[in-house]
Image (cartoon, rainbow, N blue to C red; front, side, top):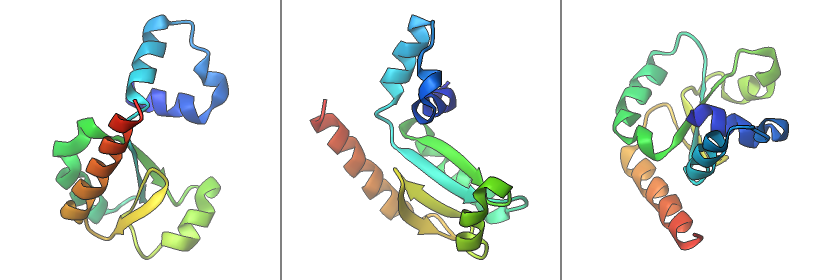
Length: 118
């Protein structure tokens, strides 16, 4: 459901869900930060990074971007030698390996920011 909620934010037409429950769930999850993983197959480092992030998965929405797809050629040109690359809420966060201390710090900062804005 979280991925669908992310997509509904990205695609305005998808927001008009006839289901009140769907709207409620999406609005509840929209405050979660979005962690974007730029990846390709195979990517053992990406698999390892996802395992490291597993304990935090309820605190963010994971969006994977396959840089080998034609529509992602700009990301391929930028990151072909650097995957995995992570952006948090659209801003570069880290590459190659998960820096768990940096990730926790940035995630907590976003959570505190969201709490203050509610």
